[in-house]
View 1 (cartoon, rainbow, N blue to C red):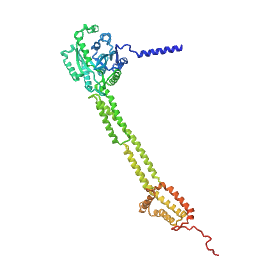
View 2: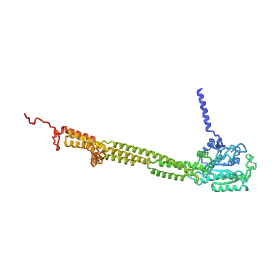
View 3: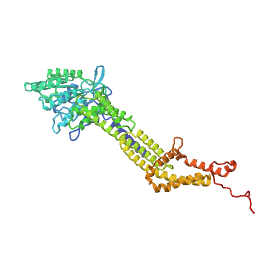
View 4: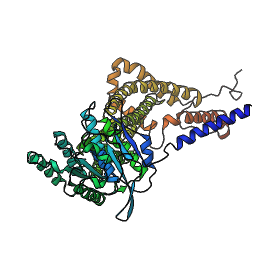
Length: 581
């Protein structure tokens, strides 16, 4: 029982999935592709209609009919498709209209256009100025139909409203903005505008408005045309029940001419230099619809921004790629020069590729703002890396100067050499915006360290000389027993400890020529290009001490050397001394 139960559940799921995958049983019917939201202010996509379009792999062209509410758009589309009102788009006076948003006839017409097999879809749009809608919603419907269609048929009612002229101006501006700029990654081809005029409208009372329409169409040149169509029959409410034989012969004739005209001007939808298939057309529609819903009022400028968005991103990547090659930190002026060259290259690329002729300014400004934001982050990164590098160099110099302060054998020459080496290293390696700040810190630190070293240098040297005199007293007395060395050491010690304290102050001593001579001699011995005594003093001292100890214990007995200088007599009276009884 359990197995049978699970088999039943799986079967139901498979049937459910299968039914969802094949939700459209027949494409020979109208489908919604764009629907209004509950508030009837914005538009949203209808997946059912998009499925009918996405299945097409050949190039696509769309013919859209727009116009005021109950102006005969659905009837006109059925006539162009050779369909009756009962099988085609719903006609308003016949039953409740289904046209909310934009609908598509699911089975396209197959035409051979310039040797290319093209699938032509016919679109029905919701009428303008119906009850319960805002003007912004109507503008979005018109803008979307203008952009997505290859041929846009504006079905003119019996009276021309100011809104019709405004929408025509939008179409004219859109065509002027993009027309003639076809090519790869450059523009999309705007729809061919066909202004369909009822013949009985062309009366003297409307001649000014008609002339205004003609002037607007003349501006668009080859991208627009006008066509007059007589009334099919006086009894409009019965049009769906009438055959062609019952209609006005002139209407039938003009209707066939209209079909031929549409077929002659229709072309595959071109976007960024290539024709779109079903899936690409749906993707294009999604991008346009998103942009229209974001804007308060659809405009040519807002549509230009949509198409320029990708180009702005591409140019920004070009700038980022150039700036990404930099090795930070670097001097501020060098960074500014690279920024200027990279920005100029990005702006040139935008000028070459951008959409629109007059309304590309906002996209240009957006690119400029994005570049400024990236450059701001690079400047901050340069400051960070510069601060890290200069701080490391400053700390290293500070440590080196601290080590120079505690030399075992103080040497002004060695301090100056270390001071100059540290300063030279800082000058060469510390770069970027933090350099000036750390240069000031270096000057203060170096000046303070130098003053402190000089202040302690003379005192430490004086103490070393006192210590040296005592050591030499011990060496002369007990090790090598040189009377003159011991005496000289005592004289130096007495001089340093008594005479200088009695007759000189410590400061006056340091400015005395004798002291300068002592300092020069000390510096020559302690630090010179051949030998750094501060580093080798202990090894040399130990070696000399061991040699003296060896000589004192064994060397004199073995070699019995005689000194030229007077020495202490260490021999006591022995057996050779004459005895006296």
